[in-house]
Length: 457
Image (cartoon, rainbow, N blue to C red; front, side, top):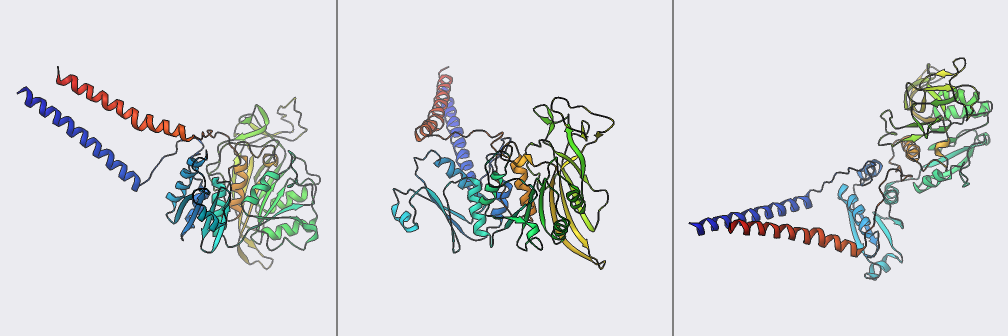
């Protein structure tokens, strides 16, 4: 009777082990067929960006990627995982890994001498030497694009420099735009009859001097012809009536003073509003915290002229603890003056879209004029653009102005991103033996010990 009982016990244990093993095999097979993972990092650092996903949605023909990297490269495993993310999102992507030293024939055939990625799409080719997500997606987008977009920086009114590398310049965003394959050129509007026809987006960064009436009319005509403008202001504009008049034409008004925010600011400085809650919009999607040193307050114009608008105040100051300081700002003394200051929550960034324009003959024409207006320019200067979500805000604005043409919003900041540790081959082997062999073996031995003790009780 005892022997029969022991036999049944052993059979039950054996069947349990077999069933668990089969379940594990089945789960493994399913996971290979249907891949899924959940990114729980705060900044979604392990996921492809929304802009990348939009680019991949346009890919409907086979794309071949040849990765010429050595297995011993510290970043090899990270590259494999990143490319696998691309392949999973679009099965038109085919990836081939090759070592320049071990597979010289293929390297010679493609003219490859260094570690790099080579992309082939139809009859086009792109090379990527630094395999980050933005560069990989930029290469794919370039292969899919029929033409480069043209971007002009308005000059002649004291705007920020986009070529020097001083802290107050905007050279970093210029470099980022070039990586996105934009053609970039300066524009002195007084030398032209109108904004050039090939201008896809016009950037006006911190004009400090008034513009001519003729220039204002040219900007208005450009906007009313489905023009796209990014305009960031400064707290001081000499003779700024022309700029305020132009903004009013786009459906935006400017408060006359610096925005002070006691409720949400950076480092306790109420003149640097910091925002992490936004109105839902294409531009603010997945946007982290942003801040704006010495910003003007904005608002939607009470009366719209010359057509129909769709205006959204994307970024606002604290609703209960902010005001507009209309007098001189003193760093050592900031306090509300009930006689001159305006206690109000103001917008910092506004997106305005003009959908119809009224012609002189009273006819109405459908258009798609777009402008993003920011009360501050400092947030995109080289000193601040790589901090928090400032760079993302700018590039997302450019993407929206480009009519959502899948311009990749490059992450310019490492804020709140967990630092990735690249494992050596030895470290990977140790992790493999510990997690796949040693720990399961110890669990199995522990189970065998329990079964053995029960049988001899």
